[in-house]
View (tube, helix red, strand yellow):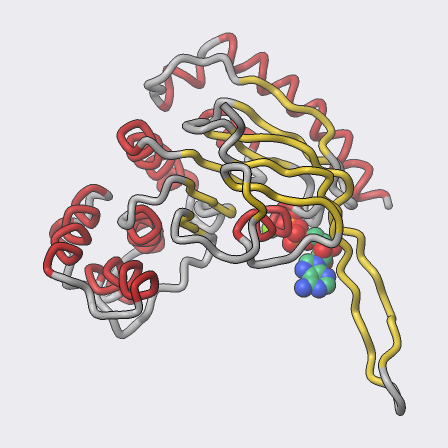
Length: 271
Ligand SMILES: Nc1ncnc2c1ncn2[C@@H]1O[C@H](COP(=O)(O)OP(=O)(O)O)[C@@H](O)[C@H]1O
Ligand SMILES: [Mg+2]
């Protein structure tokens, strides 16, 4: 079977223009990505890790159809991505809940945006189910300001998954959370993943998180981001926070991925 997601020779340069008396002048080009090639098979959980500014967010946004590559192609089920797809759910670091809507209302928004109409009763029930699935059953009527950062991210996850997309694209969704909350949400995500028949592409700068969650970890070089190495994570599922992390396999893989990543971080800081 062909991969459900595929990047083929992706190149992306950001061009910045300054207005002149007549026309525009190019002032600064940033090559964000160079020659990115990889595939994600259906049901896989793949993490992308790399130094800050190496193009991780750019790559994810290209997959989402929100940014256009200037070379190469991204394919979803073999077809070029030319815009956002209802088949894809997204979560970010700042999840952007609507402050005037309740937790439940924010999850229902996923249907409203997809269908351009008010949610049906069935969709409301589904939203209710997903609020429960992320552990917030008694907070349905709460507004975002009444919820902690971790609870808001849970709502974000529920909103991304309630329409049951085939693919989840995540850009450092736990990046702003404290360390303990982060561990808990990682396990919540794995639980949803294990029951959801979903493919996940997950960007993080957290080595431990990348390994713990994934089937495969892709390490990018410093900017312009290229694939430096791909690691298979040969750890059985279900995974358990402390048990899995104390396995010899986990520890030695973490050491190896870190050695690879560290080279790039050092280079990116000396450039
Ligand atoms: N809209 C933009 N215009 C110009 N440069 C950008 C834009 N978005 C990102 N960049 C630059 O592209 C590079 C990669 O950014 P990004 O994909 O956000 O990296 P990461 O998520 O790995 O930190 C950075 O140097 C960033 O400053
Ligand atoms: Mg980023």
